[in-house]
Amino acid sequence: MKTFEELESKVRSYVRDFPTVFTRATGHTVFDENGRRYIDFFAGAGVLNYGHNNPLLKARLIDYMSRDGIAHGLDMATEAKRDLLNTLNDVILAPRDMKYKVMFPGPTGTNSVESALKLARKITGRSMIIGFTNGFHGMTMGSLAVTGNSTKRGGAGIPLTNAFSMPFDGYLGEDVDTVDVLARYLDDRGSGMDLPAAVIVETVQGEGGINVASFDWLKRLEKLCRKHGMLMIVDDIQMGCGRTGPFFSFEPAGIKPDIICLSKAIGGFGLPLALTLFKPEYDKWTPGEHNGTFRGNNLAFVAATEALMAYWQDDGLEKAVQEKGEMVRLRLEQMADRFDGLVEGVRGRGLVQGMVFGAEGMASAVAHEAFSRGLIIETAGFTSNVLKVMPPLTICEEALVKGLDILEEAIAPVARREVTRMNARAAE
Ligand SMILES: Cc1ncc(COP(=O)(O)O)c(C=O)c1O
Image (tube, rainbow, N blue to C red; front, side, top):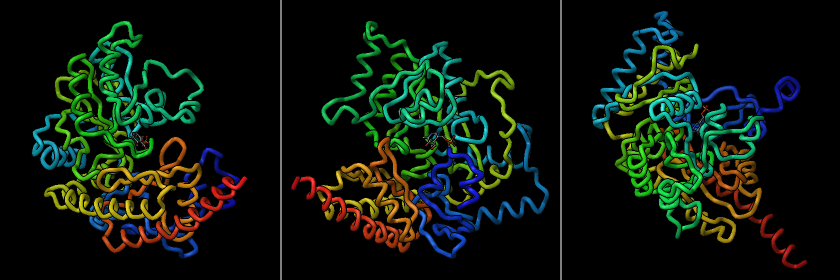
């Protein structure tokens, strides 16, 4: 690790949680340079939905490269881009009766969010955007302004303006309907809130602690958007591409967002790709008004196309995610019962499930123990109090069970330490 400590900036983060040098990976398994093998319950923060080095995608990429296919294309027309646009339309959008224009905003999630915010402001002529408590949308200035985490916001070094944070579903407790709170702010012109251009929302807040919005909440949020002429942006960067089951996480809510942000798993193989989808009537961009050198990552187009062809022409993956998600959920609930008093609950949807710990530092300690036992798992939430189970969607049941076994083994010593600490404190 010396090279990283000496030469790489202190800004590095995941390497601190998983302090080893990784060398290769297939499916749900990652190897380090000492030959240790790890089960991956992290999936590149939601990028590797189809696993590491997925053989179908790899074969397509190798074939494309060996034919000297275009690798970089700005936003020029290429065969690979045409294939992706047609496949996205034929396999995903048309069967769902979704008419959306596709924009290539730049390679990462935050590029998609920035383009969505710009477009909403341009369309409505309003500047303010509503984000939600514990929302996470990326590290560039516009995205940070609608992100809740104060540490990330602090990195901006300038005031983050033209955004207003409102309570997410459940933020004010079970008895408070936070759509009603927002409705009151919007209806009452003495509230101090300017009429917003848009709301930007995650259906399940990934980084913010696996906070799940109910479908009813999302539906009523959409209705409020229509009433006040604000656009609804769904940031499906982490929860899209099947993470919660359906291709788009919002499908079961029956809503039609005005703008959809996609990234992470859309590239299939882990290659950077982001898309911004919007209703055709909002396509008010002028040529080049939003630009970027790396909008034409054709290798990502090739892998993305193959992923859509291989996994989304039928509902096999969606069903498998639901089944495996239920299995994970059940097992985590059993663990929550076993460690009653230490685990506050389990929440999530599909193959993103969080276990909420009460005591500070416990989830991180469990993640650390799990890593030493061969499981890669991260935490979520501002205080890192939620253990986040997010394996590749293609993981087999056997590995899923093995990973969950390791997790339970990892919780046990941390729980013992915590109980000892609590008893010592009670005896004081
Ligand atoms: C919901 C959501 N939006 C946006 C982003 C930012 O994506 P990127 O890190 O690729 O810029 C993330 C990253 O974790 C995310 O989870």
